[in-house]
Length: 81
Image (cartoon, rainbow, N blue to C red; front, side, top):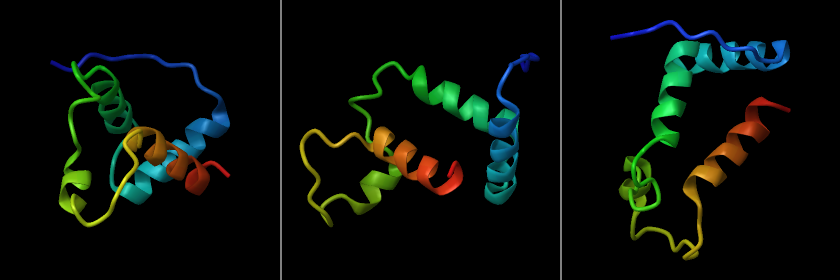
C-alpha cells in the first residue's frame, strides 16, 4: 500500500533530481523509494548487485571497494556539478 510522504529539500536539489528522474525514465517518488529500499536492506554489505555480478571476473577490484559509495560519487559528479 502506498502512503504519502512529505519531504523538505533544497530547491536546487529537487530540480536536479527532477532532471535526473526524467533522463532515467523514473519519477521522484520512484527514486526516493529505491533509495530507501537500498539503505534499509538487511545485509547490504553481503549482497552483490546485478551490475557488479555481470562484470565479475572481468576486472580486479580492491577488497575494500564500496560499490555504493563509488556509484554515489560518480552520479554526484555527473549530475550535481
